[in-house]
Every structure is written in structure tokens, then in C-alpha cells.
Length: 296
Image 1: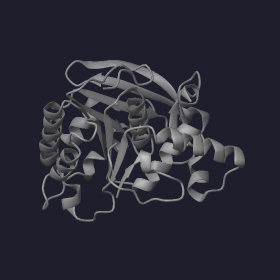
Image 2 (image 1 turned 90 degrees about the horizontal axis):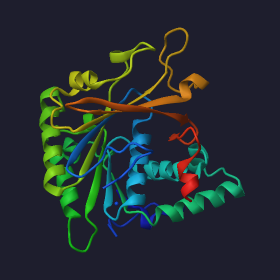
Image 3 (image 1 turned 135 degrees about the vertical axis):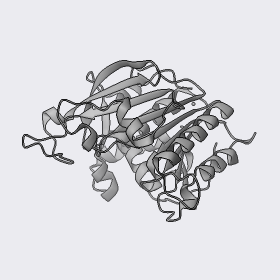
Image 4 (image 1 turned 90 degrees about the vertical axis):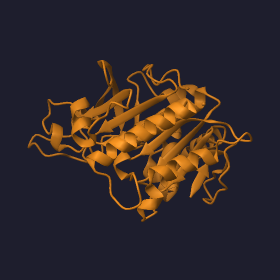
């Protein structure tokens, strides 16, 4: 299924694949320009997909080019509901089960109207059980399909998750295959003069202590040679309880404080900023408030 935001409503979830913005800033982190491959990595349930969706919104609000989001893990409808929750600040669970107040309903409809103005396309590949549907060549073909004069050019491509992409129809992705996939994604970014962002699930065993943050070495252990990438972004939250157990859904004040760090692949760390994780809406908010509410 392919969802375009201009066709999305709360009451209907079948959409025509119609495509009707280079980001200058993401919450103060100036790290994106065209021709770049960005890797975004975090442990399980830390907020990889959420952060990439916020990148998509930020880009679409600032640019005329389109955002193409490939969802290999979740359904397109679920991604759409998450976007509504991020913008409206209405808890995601309420949107999914449609159990919200009149005031929340108004916020949701305002968020829907805001989304309808953005050039965001969600390509749902998560329920294609064959490797062919998750093939890197299939992703390239889908982008080229929309590179037509009658459509806005694609400026940002997001792949969620990189480990779910295959290099051909017969093998799953090993470290060697991952290196080939990264080279193809970098080639796509350069040839189409776009930004390509790939989400990476780093697991938790590589940094299973409270003090250890994810770094470029974690990407290299999983993916092999990551030199085709230009930027590496890591997300860290203290997900461990006092017994040293990794907690997925129990949030203390300590677990809500998030660190987002930007690295250049060749030159190392650029800087870190702190955000607050909102577990109800699955989004990161600035310490000074909600940037989406300010923009509304």
C-alpha cells in the first residue's frame, strides 16, 4: 500500500499512489544536505522510527521536494497514525482505537489537515513476505517511478529498517550484503541529488551498561564497512532498571531524557543535544516545548 498525505483521512485507508521539501535544520542540528547517506541508529524501543518520522515532517515543512518513507516493519496506516499523534500531541493509542475527547478530535483533524499539505509518501512494504518486495532494487524502482515531470522530485528517502532490506531475491542480509546495500543507497543519493536516511536497529548487547552510549563502532560491527555513509546519528536513553534489565515500556523520569548525537563518519562526533521522550505520542520534544505546536 502507498499512502500520500494529501489523500489521507481518518475514515478511509485506501489511497491512490499520487505524489502531488533539502532540510536546513532539524531541531537545531544542521547536518543534512543533498547527496548524503545518513545512518540513524538506536537500541530497541528507543525511538528510531519516531525520530526518522520527525525528520520527515521537518523536511516536508521546509522544502518543496517530496519525502518517500519506506516502511519495512510497520503498516502504512500505523505510520500515518503516528504522524497524526506527533503533530496533534494526542496519544497514539487513542487515535488507533478512536477513543478521544472532542477537544482531541479537533486536534487530530487539524493535524490531518496539516499533513494533507505536506509532500510525504509512505510505501508500505512491511507485509510483503517475499524478499523480492524488500529488495534494494525494488526500492530504487519505486523512487524512479515517481521521478517524472508531473510529480515533485523526491528530496528525502527514509528506509525503516536497513536490516530488513535484501540485496537480491535469494539471500537475507549479511554483513557483506549490507556493505553492498549501503553502496547502492549512497549511489542513489548521489545520482538523484537527494538525502537517503536508513534506520539501523543496533540491539542492546553492544552497549548493555548504563554508561555506554552507541557509537560508530556499533554500526561497523553490524554493517561492516560504513564508509559510504556521510552522517551517523545515534539515539540513547537510559533503558535499564536498577537490576540491570533492559526495559521496553516502563518509563521513569530518567528514561525519558534522550541524547541525540550527530557524527561525521570520517571525522567523528559533531555534537549532542538532549530531548524529552514522549511515550504517549512516541516523539521527541525539545526541553523548551513542542516544536510542532509552536508551528501550528
